[in-house]
Image 1 (cartoon, rainbow, N blue to C red):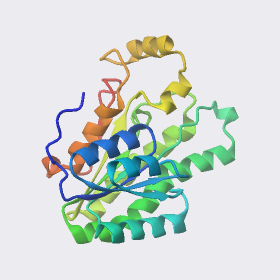
Image 2: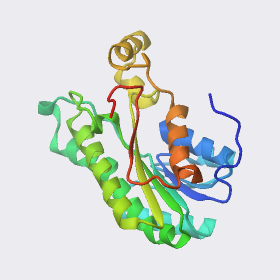
Image 3: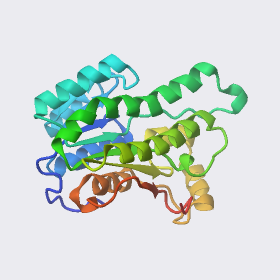
Length: 249
């Protein structure tokens, strides 16, 4: 489904968080094909295999840990000679009824999904400003645009991320463009763990998605590529739904 690469990110130096799996991994692989130099962030050692395969730098970092983020961003900028872009794709996806959502789970969800992008963006800001024509793309969710039951913590974190993205777009302009992509259900481990039965997942998609199916990670990665590349040079502060027509936002 991915078109041939044509060097759309040649010379760009980009951090991708959550790069070991799902949308983050697909984005990292696509960006590498498009010529970007990459620093891959993920908790644990999950990104190292991918980094070795695509010639990227790997960092074991919890994006909710302020000191770890500051150190990793500084090292990434040093190794790559600066930063031109950031993709905040790290996230967790707890599915709980309101009464079953503990304060600990609520805080952890916001720490990873909202505070994480804030910390990484803050640490990267001076490098991105120095580069000029830089980009931040935050991976939100269709749950930020249209509520879904049992996703109170997740929806709140992604709704906050959508507004954070707009604030950063206003604050960091004109040197840095900031946009957010809001995927619908996408064929990643997060979604398939929620709907482990493929037939049930397909039926669910038919009932709520205009296109009658869930998305593929490459389809979201292509939207992130557009917002990172020079092709979107006059686009900032946008919330782009990549959701097969679930929200018509």
